[in-house]
Length: 283
Image (cartoon, rainbow, N blue to C red; front, side):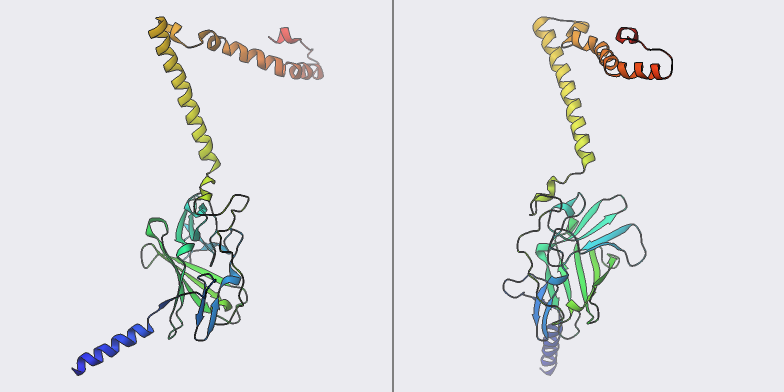
């Protein structure tokens, strides 16, 4: 009986000292938490213009393969992948420019441990179920916040940051209004989870256009040849749609080049003393 009572007491102690999720005050973002010692409020160190407050963060172990970015309280845009959808809280980028969203800003939750002060922000629903934990270090002298990124060395797909700022202290920073709507994409475009999907790399657009044009040309020649063969009983090169146009195209291109560059060639020849020539001679 006594053993059961002692075990029950230990369980209660364990639960009471465990980190508990904090419900933010009404109308405040999830980076604000009322504690017994005062309010922890990170809103004043958050960028609200669609960019990350912390960017190009090197990995703390010296690995140069990745760099990291982070913005508390509000989402931001970065790169051309899922980090550009307007809902990123933390991102990882490699040397090729590919980005991976490490956590969704809408899942931001602050966990408070009143006994140890080991408080952190957690973000879920990153790419491939990535999770980010941002551990908060209270430093009353840290007027300018600093951050480090550890990567996911200890637990796969769980990424660790350490944020040091006076705003991590209870009562350390005053309240700063944070927009409730997603930020506007830098350089134009609206906010929202799917609004950034139009931010496709220019090279991808060019490749898609070339593929569409090639498909169009192939379809044009194949369908035209079938129609000429089946309906008009054409054979051989007579099956080429608009044959006369395509056979004369090289000569038309030549005439166009001569007409366009002929005056320039004549001018160069006159300047170099080699004489000039009219349009017909250049042909």
